[in-house]
Image 1 (cartoon, one colour):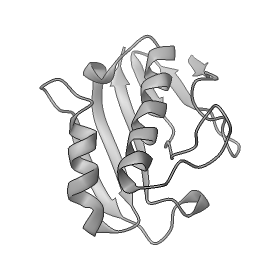
Image 2: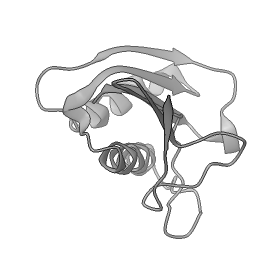
Image 3: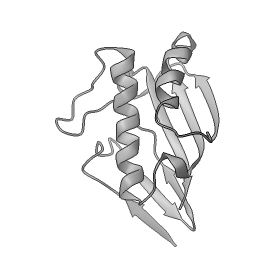
Image 4: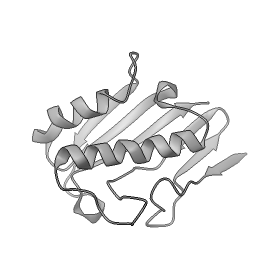
Length: 125
């Protein structure tokens, strides 16, 4: 059985998908971009602001499922430009306490709403 996770503290889905799904003892999140859930607008003034918004959105989804970044076992980071790797990586790392999850980071041709970064995660419940 699966359970759908949804919170108003993260942006609503912009397509036919859920913010996250629990299957067994795993939480699978959809990718988060820098939409501010308070107003539905993109928060992309700088790459730092954008990445923090993405991670804060992810934190809200994890919280709704009853977990934190400490439960994350796998992350996928999608970048519009690999030259942004170091800055995104530094901000991303600041949300974790020690043991980091497995991860891949890839450059892609285009992301939804033409953002610079999208992140998805898998966490253990």
